[in-house]
Image (cartoon, rainbow, N blue to C red; front, side, top):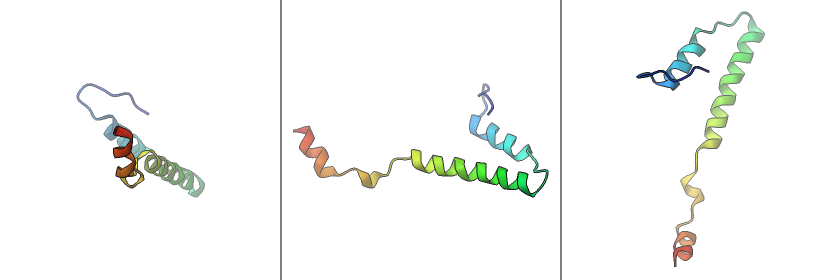
Length: 63
């Protein structure tokens, strides 16, 4: 992963690095694709689901 540079978006820098990586053979291509899938899955796990919050529980705890 790259370090953030002044004035540049770190996420875009990482994407360009990933795009510069070329697969050597089918196995390497599969490994690169699995890494992408793993990052997507981890990103999905890291996002909160607003449906998990029950507003009734929150109002009861405030009182």
